[in-house]
Structures are given as C-alpha cells and as structure tokens.
Image (cartoon, rainbow, N blue to C red; front, side):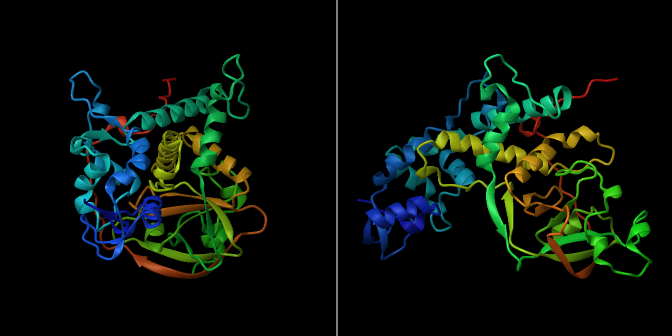
Length: 381
C-alpha cells in the first residue's frame, strides 16, 4: 500500500490531518523517511468538496473560450491554493490520482476560480457596482428591486463580500514603508521650502490644497501612499532612464491595522471549510478588487475611474482599519500601502536614499479581454 506524508503538502490543514491520523513511516511519493504518513485514500473525503468546485474542461467547439482554457486538475489546485510542497509537486499528479482513486480525474482539464464560474461571478458583480457608481448614484444606494433584499443592491453585496475578502494585517512600529519623490519637481517648491532642504514633509502626503484624487482617496482627503520596499516605491514613480529618484523610509508611530487586499490565493485552506464554494467566490472577488486597485494611473483619466476603489477604501476605513494594502501596478510582486492621514500623522519619516535609474526594461504580452475587469464605456457626448 502506498503512503503519502506531511512533506508532500504545503496546505496546513492537510498536513495537520496527516500528522494526527497517520503513523511514522516512509513516503512513497516525495521520498521523505521517518515522517507521519497516511494512505492517500484517507484524504479523499477532505478533497472531494474542493474538486467538485472546478469545472471539467469541455472541448466542444460551441463552448465559450473562457471555458476552453484549462490545465490539469493538479496544476489548477497548485495555482489556486498552493496545495503541494516543493518536495511533493513533482509527484502531484500520481498523488492526486491516488487520493481520488482515479488517474483520469487527476489529469482532467479544469479552469481555476479566476477563469471559471466564480471569476465570472466576481467580475460581473464588480462591473455592476462600477456602473452603479458611475451612472446612477454616488452617495445613497436605493434598493434596485421592490423586494428590498440585500442581493438586489450591488453596493451591499460588495460590502458583504469585501468584509470576508479583506484580511487583517498588522504593520508594527518596527516595519518600514517607503515613499519616493523626484527632486525639483515643478510645483513642489512652493510648499517644501528652499532648494537643497530635505524636510520630511516633502515625502509625506501633500497639504490639503494639493491633494489630488487617487486610488484610495477622493480629492482633498489625506492618504499616505507608499510601498513595502524601496524598489517598488521607485517603480511607482515611473521614472525614465538616467532620472534621479529619492526614496525615504517611514515607520509607524504605533501598530497599524491594515486591510490586506493583495492578490494571494492561499488566504485560507479550502480543505477546512464546508462552504468551500463560497470561499472560492470570495477569493475571486478579492482578486478582482486587487486588480482594480492595481490599475495603472492614466495621466488624463476621468475622475470617475477611481470611484469604485475609493468606495472600497472608505468602507475599509469605516471598519476601523488604518489603511489598506494592494498590489503594485508597476512592479510584479510589489506591494503598495495607503494609510489614512487626517489629524495626527500615523507615520514618521527617517532617512532618504538616492536611486539613479540606469536601465529600464519592458515585457509585453497578448491582451485577453475576458480576463480584464470590465468597466462601463462612457457614452460619447
């Protein structure tokens, strides 16, 4: 009889189950020895509800292209949930086949929650919400249907799902946040002092009269925008070659409660939730919101472009968070942060660093309209 072990998996729920239910032995999949092992079919009851969430790939020609992009099921599980460890990923297919008792099921093509029904549901909800803010109402949201049910109100639905999608993260006084500036930027000298000075105010949020609308703030509202590393902060300035950028490090004056909206697929273990389908929809919606927050800034963009993400930020703030974390639009893997800045500042500036941009590289790819967040098109005047 074959055995799998705790070292085959990265998912904590599966690891814990094997450790509690198995016995010491040698693994037939990853090769680990003297570790807790278990017969793979002992994991079937935990894995079946998760497997059923994914749609089997349909090869018929009349199936929409969105459902024709599939990967083997074991790859989809790894992409969406990081189920297998580095030691176990090489034997993921035979391991999943042993768990399910059917090799064909492990190899069947499936679509993940980004491309499948959950991703489509999340994109449609966000599109409906953006259309509501853009064309119907900004401040009061009357029930759309006479029934008065929450599901008839896109704003209420967004708040409900967002509450589950936002993961709390603590930014401690020992953590560092980076903020970048261009030296001698036109228009700044009026409020940063004489040339050559390095006041911390230069790296903080602008004064009220200079606060433009951003991803997380309406015009005039103070928000400190930064990044969790200096390179990402410099990227956000979109510098050109041979340009000089100054980056200053900041530290919280107290521990801050941050709502994490970055794109992470392993926020919870799908194997420990009886309502895994709902959890997948929440993860898909979080992915859409994160993508909207990370949309690159358009120099001549319309002020309505930020309405939806500004609403998200205001809702998060009303829940008692001090800021929110979102993915960088300019650097893959980078994380940006927005901290509310009204009254007493929550961040203290420290030292600045000089970055000289010597090389810029670009990477292109084919645009896939079906995977973009759909925004309503403004009618021609």
